[in-house]
Image 1: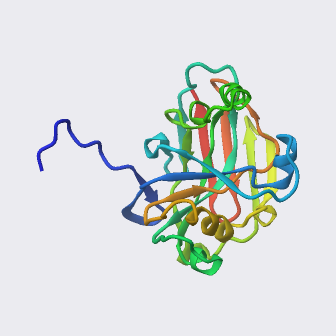
Image 2: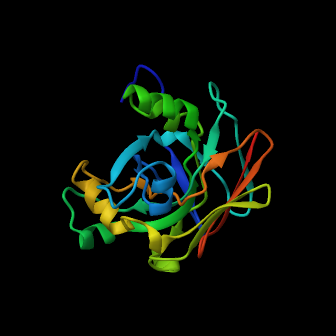
Length: 231
């Protein structure tokens, strides 16, 4: 097929213990999915889950046991971290039941939902979309995928983030307001999900700023660590 401009290369994720890559179609994110984080952002209760998106090419792939780098983005003075469990789907559908949604999960990774908080806050006040705060270039550092068949189904376990060796975030996957399967099922009522979609599932309390030179270390029980330095 002739094209007017060259095709951009496909966005893929590394898989632990496999030379094959996982192609990424879309990035979805769940907002305020831990009760303590919802409270620190000014909300309470088990609200209906809501979602936003990042472009697939916002991903920064970080190799296993390596330290990745992300550039400090433009037009912000308040870049903040949010460590999250990421799930990758190998099938999809519309209006999935919770049981069907659970079967869509192929694997897991550790991700950072980096946020230009000042730009997000300004957009909220004006009733505007969040893309400038959430979907900027390099806003989604992520480690390699761990196949579910090898690590099992993650329903609980510690999720943490440290900055320069100081613990900033600490939670447990069991404390998700909407668990992975429930979130995927709800999302499938809004979009037709397909193989290659990934979902950032929410962050625990303790979000805060980083500056150039800071090193973030995210961890999830069973998935190791994700190390990212801001440059």
